[in-house]
Image (cartoon, rainbow, N blue to C red; front, side, top):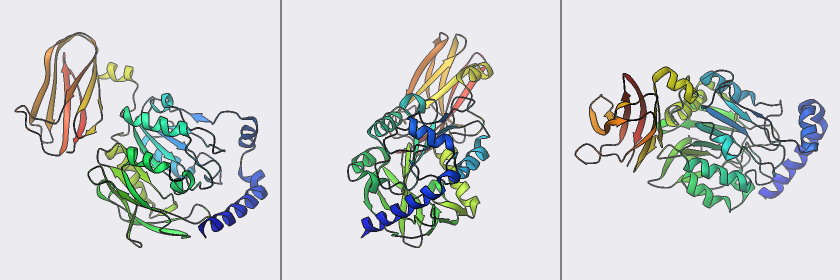
Length: 371
């Protein structure tokens, strides 16, 4: 039944797109698809920050690209030009950004919209996303029909990289609107979203998180379901719903801000290049991962040689552990913290701060420890 409904939607979509393509899709996009030119990529003015991937192969916003909803959200957080944009893809076989491109950013929002008729994520995409996560990157994956379009083969990949335990597909068969509510770290008020297009309703999935690995991120109070989950280590999140025109818009903006700034730890105004950080602070410091269960690695660059201290503090400023206290040459060094205090006991779950000091300079990184 669903397959027939989807086929009807597809026929109507093709008819509508054929009728309106001259007005809706820019001619340059039509030329790119015909010639096989690469997918457009608009890098941020500065390295770091967020990359948005518009990977709907034609199922993205009909008003053109970039997607005005997400452009406004990201500009509101990071400012114009301070985030990257890749897309749109116009064919299911087109790859998204490669690993090197993603590694220029601290986090990636990868939106597959409601594409359902083919596997939006290519094999290259899945490999690159998995490798990016292993390297300490953060991914917010959105795909209303990702599981349906990719088929059962996508489930093990989602289990490994996004903490999915099981899925109940199409819990909201044919719905044209939803009420959603952010949960836990993404807590928000209830807001309404509408289907991307009037002729293509929702077929959202209920996602079951893996106990001890992930948890609920967004809730549908009308159906008592969870179409969004979040990894406990804050590395990734998967949403099986994508809506337009959130109302009240402020509640969805709260979720986007919380996901990117609080959970993924990509705050506004901190997307400097390494050279800019070193010039301003004398020390560059990063952590991978910043939210962890077992061990996090601190990588720091000191501009001048000297006595270096690397210490971990709790939220009230109390010293938890000294990791390094020795003379070091200029250059890059690393230190690891396994979530223990100076006495060797495991610390409580919560937020901690790693601080590197050398020669009158210092830099601090936020860490989230979750057993």
